[in-house]
Image (cartoon, rainbow, N blue to C red; front, side, top):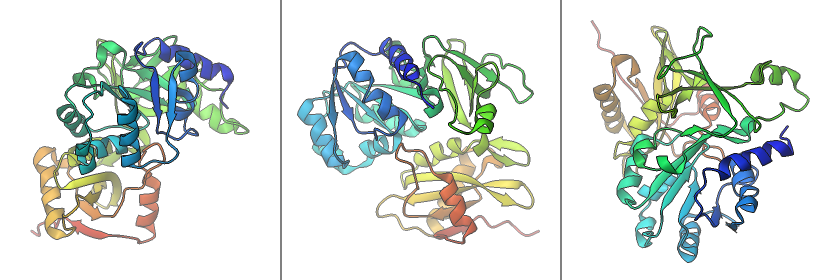
Length: 348
């Protein structure tokens, strides 16, 4: 249940850290998603900004529109940002007038961030962190943090909001210590309609939203998200963040897209498995699978090593760009598989 006051509060929070030159907003994201609802339909009213709506999305239609209106800032999701650095059609356009990329809804890998910086050196980068339950942003980058060196983080806490980082033992984390992110503020929504149980589980008695995300806050008040707590892979009881391995594999030149999940293992409890969409022209098979397994093994400690690779045509994602891991799990259970390559254990 999202109250009018939640949306109003969020708009007032975001406008404080919005550059004064943002007078045109490209509405690429779905309006039924919280980011589109707030940042494309409501915030522009407060900013007195023009909204350019795309009736349907293609890279060509988006780029044509960006060039026609010479937009300075683009609010996009990671799948589109990945295409901006990898799709050949982008090279057909002069985008030198761009000044900022804004991202949200899902994590963006460090490898893609660096490719954006290289391809568009005149730009800065900002992102917001939140969810539907926080009516969009809990944190965001203020203008002073638009440098790409800060792009891996999700910015600082927005106005009138309190954030706590809670460790596994229930105590508050110190500077740099990871734990679950809890947030309280006027943008936090009322709860779930006709679902008191879910409301009690997500919003505690003190009014804090339990995000289910793991993160840490540094000495400058900048927050970094490490992963979803429920999506952590437990290898011999040690937590492995899927996002860390996804970021690494996205940096491999033969990988177009990737998702990492934990699969059951008799010895380790769980082990990481990578679902890979190869780059165009790359053959999905044993050789490429073993190359990617070796690539991760070389760059990560042993317990984080990917033990199995499955090549698929597309990573299932929501409209906002979040990986739909449950879809991959369902396919695994139902025996729907692509080309699978496993690391063979040496026999003693």
